[in-house]
Each structure stands twice: as C-alpha cells, then as structure tokens.
Length: 89
Image (cartoon, rainbow, N blue to C red; front, side, top):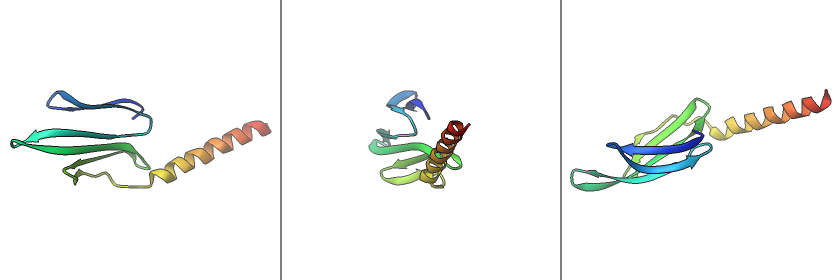
C-alpha cells in the first residue's frame, strides 16, 4: 500500500500511481465489444487492506468499511503519547 500501485488487466498496465495510504485508479476495459469504465479504490481500514472495485459505477467488490479515520486517530494519539512520555523520562 505504500509505494507504487500498478493495475494490470490481461497482462497490460491500465493504471499506475504512487500511494502512501491508498489511492483511486480509473481505467477502461473492453467487454463484449463495449467499453466499461472501472474504478479501483485501495486503502487501509481497521481490518487491514481495503479494496473496492466498481464497473460502470456498480460495485463488483466492496471491502467491509470499518472506519479508517478512527484507525488513523488512534495511531496519532499513540505516537503523541510516546513522544510525550519520552520527554518526561
């Protein structure tokens, strides 16, 4: 999730982006002689990696949502407390 994300369809790169905590990829695929617009969303949640895939705005794969914001707030509080305790001792 941290680094370069590459999306391949049938061995061909259709999207490539740098990501720190996840990103959104937009690409098109050919299906039954028609073009389908796709969106792949990656990120982190309390249960780990979150991946959602949409084709023509309809969900194909949706990971359970568990409050990514809460996860990051917990991390920030823990880092703050560690820094505070290090200064005391």
